[in-house]
Image (cartoon, rainbow, N blue to C red; front, side, top):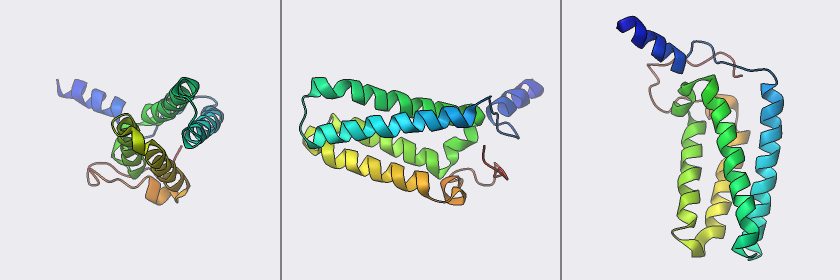
Length: 144
C-alpha cells in the first residue's frame, strides 16, 4: 500500500520535472497567442466593442492561458505552490469577477495584465519561489 502511495506522489511530484519534445517552442507559440488575444480583448473592452465581438477573444485568452498552465502542471505539480501559480490563481479569480462587477471590467483586466507582466518578467528565483510547503519540496536547480 505504501509503495503505491509513493509511486502516486512521485508521479505527481517527480524529482526531475517532466519535459516533452518541442516544449519550449510550444510554450513560446502559446504565450504569443495568449498575449495577442488578451491584448485584443483588453483593447476591445477599452473601446467598448460589443460583447459578441469579444467573446471569441475571451475564449482564446482563457484557452491559451489554461494550456500554458497545463504544460507547467505536466512538468510537476510542485508549481502549484510557487508564486507563479498563486499569481495565475489570482488572475483567474479577477477574470471571474469581471462578470460580477461588469462596470469595472477594464480596471480588472488591466490589473490582470499587470500581474501577468510582472510575474512573467521577474527573475525566476522569485517567480518559482515556493509560497507553500517550502520544507516539503526542494527547489529544482534549473527550470525547464
